[in-house]
Length: 556
Ligand code: C2E
Ligand code: MG
Ligand code: MG
Image (cartoon, protein in one colour):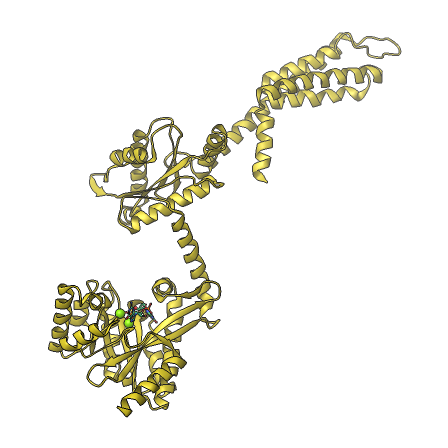
């Protein structure tokens, strides 16, 4: 709506050439009609004279001071000496009357023209403020939108590509040196980018630390433009005397044939920038699949908040087999999300999302409550097993988690030795000492502690050193290659020896074939889990699986 009003105001204040001629013709006709009206009404003694103000003010507003002045003089002449004071009596006007009137009309024209100039200056200033970034003096996103629209119009509806340049870690500079230093860096970046690009290429500052370039048709390609920017920009800057290193990332988006706006193109190029940061590349191009993933993530993040309340989360249990007895010694609880529209969603996809929000605390409670309720039922049925829950480091950040766990264990009357916590994480967290304290308290109460995915990431050894551990679970990537890759076999063998040296139980994950099972047993592994024994199953199915396995072992 405001765009439409703006368009009307623009076409009124800045008419095109043909419209100008039409307006001039219209204003002349209007003044003549006013003159005819005055004459027909009986002469200048009637008040119809005032209708001349309309064309005079209009002319002043549209054609500024010269327009207003010309319209005023013309009006003064129309109702000048040749216009009678009274048409019926055929009396002429006194000279002073039409001269003063003519001067007055001219002054009104000049005044309205001057007002129009002031108003235009005000509007232009407002427009500049709205479309220019005050720090870099480059167009902002609104300004770039106008340039984009203009280019699309000139190119008969074809959309140009967009290149986005984003400065990584600008906020760190802000934190270390303050906003004045950040502004200095941004001005330097602007200068370098402007020097890199030909004068006809439009550069804009569209977001914090983010610049956008419209790639004009029939000029350099996106790659060439990116290379130029990269070379000129470099990554070394000076804040006062202090040299700093600042990385930039590039993302580009090319129109795919559908309807596009500048905003949609900048959004896509920004997605490409994020992808380049994630992949540790300097640049990336937008792919429609990235968009689908983002839309899916957004939907999942939103739906997650309701998933627990609406009972969409379920626990599946995968049996763990003791290699000495062949018994099912325990189960691992693996969460499943049965989304009403998207179907089954793997924990690998949504657990990292939960971990980024406060929902993690609600989720941890739900996980413990559900697993303990099922464990209580199994123990009641006489099944002797431990139930393992997966805890990532985020689960330990909830300050009340240990107290809640104790409450739940009391409430479900489950002996603590039947609960196991599998610690999963690839990176060592900053609060490892706090995690160690919580786990130590758990272990003193009898809860079993395992290190999951042992051998992957850089944290496994640190965990062995700093966390109280009972068991290690060798990651499935090693188990999967154990029959074909001698290095994998050597790693598994070493892990088993290491585990046993430290008095730990060693479990292998992801056993899929009998050969793998035999090999692991032969290497001295204490137990394992995998599709060879059973896939993860929901409560009822897991219960009957365990009952039939126990019955089978008894009859043997
Ligand atoms: P994990 O704890 O290492 O769990 C083992 C994963 O391997 C499970 O995948 C399981 O279904 C799969 N698996 C088991 N046996 C085999 C096999 O023989 N072959 C193959 N190819 N795969 C096998 P899932 O259920 O998709 O879980 C993936 C990861 O998600 C888990 O890895 C765990 O780190 C995480 N996760 C699952 N549930 C939870 C949870 O409740 N809390 C937390 N924090 N993480 C969870
Ligand atoms: Mg696990
Ligand atoms: Mg694992």
